[in-house]
Length: 232
Picture 1 (cartoon, rainbow, N blue to C red):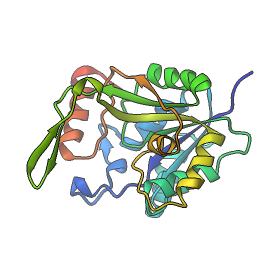
Picture 2 (picture 1 turned 90 degrees about the horizontal axis):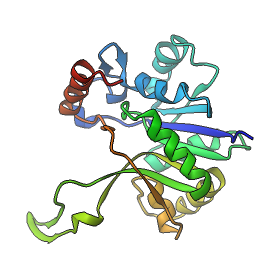
Picture 3 (picture 1 turned 90 degrees about the vertical axis):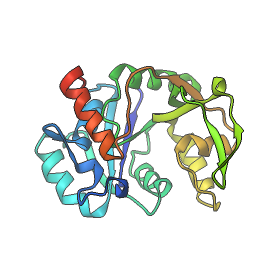
């Protein structure tokens, strides 16, 4: 029997690092907004029953008219407004999912290059593992720095870059999220919440391009990937 799998796309960020008037998720990447490219990656998957896009309040009309209505996404896609932090934004999304949701997939709105095969692999792993985060192997040497001075060099062999999507059993994530909201800890992704409460989080190895577009340089690289390499 098919599982009830829903997707939350986190797109409520301010995009201050871009230094532009338009927020990063709404910037045009070739002929479409970045956010639209991202939505399309999940909309085309039959296993996904519902998609909630978490956006800033000011973007409500734009996303409804220019992305959802314009592309006839209404049958599967809806929006909610985000909170003051990523954790609160994702929690708002969780509250708007159907009560019979079994698995939730969380993805950054500005990661439009995620491969369908990676999404499906992570979802499949989550059916058994309950908590799965897409990761790529770290290739750089990572140093801990204090006061502009290196204090430690970490062992690259055990380091991975946490990306999205991140997939969870819905009830497990909701339980941990509600516990996390009672703390004063700032969690930067959902998998770290489960780690904090002692749950195992498994990785889904991603060797494909999955850049997060947060700067002008990222946007230029994304345009190159489409023009020269035919991605997306």
